Image 1 (cartoon, rainbow, N blue to C red):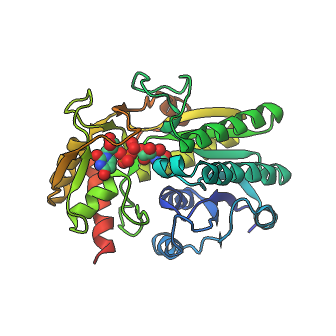
Image 2 (cartoon, rainbow, N blue to C red):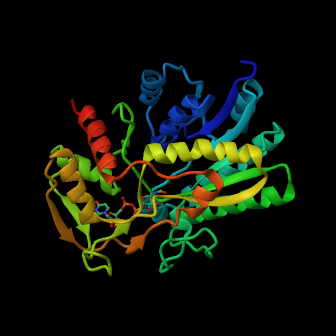
Length: 337
Ligand code: WQD
């Protein structure tokens, strides 16, 4: 226990959280997971043990449970925290705004109180490209003025602001606000990956289920955008690259104070049809699709400027779209073996 570099990982049983726990262990840290399993499965822990050989300390608790956080932080002297826990479905947030504000902001507030009380004043926060305004020129830069179009995005914006204000009030605090673009793919082992509950909202898990025959065809939400082929363009980043960015961010948070927002993307956008073509080429699996109406709230193009991540974290995405497709398919295929 002594000299172990513990990192509290809220939502660590989830898609990005579990991949980050693997990279934390490989970099000499020991994650301690608190997760209420509202959007993840207990199987994640056994899968993580299979990959890492480690029994990661795990607490099935809500991050709004202050007593649980105090108990964990009393037991494990953490060097920092990574805050993933939160609801993340854009459409659902429009239908259930109060649940999203109560959960996502409540988790952030309680976490900040508990971390401060235990003198753990370094956090890496799971923010999102949804904090950028519609119509902003791509590639999106961190210094742009922010503005959201849905309650989910506002919870990320407001949580960022909480961390910024905390760093102003207490100069010992350090907060790295990672703005994710579109994380896809899976660990090379095929043991962990993206496993949304029910019918997937996001493109890649939906494509994978069409490829394995579980869903009939991909509905392409509009082909009349002002893009290379009319379909939506996004900056897809391999989830393992994203996980590695979190480990670099922990190092940065331990060496610096203050709040800093950093994009985590590749700087390269792909359209929906380009992703479909890449997936078919990488996996040999057909992905039938039909063009349908646009999805309300979708933007034409969302691509990151990756410059600040490179300058401050020394981060550069290593995996390309073929890896992302191959790895996503391996995980989906393993699920249905
Ligand atoms: C990607 C592209 C769709 C599904 C969302 C959240 C964002 C972040 C990532 C949390 C778009 C098209 C999709 C389908 C399709 N999550 N598409 N058919 O919307 O860029 O971002 O997930 O932080 O906050 O907003 O990702 O994968 O849903 O869509 O044509 O069945 O694929 O129109 O162009 P999105 P996505």
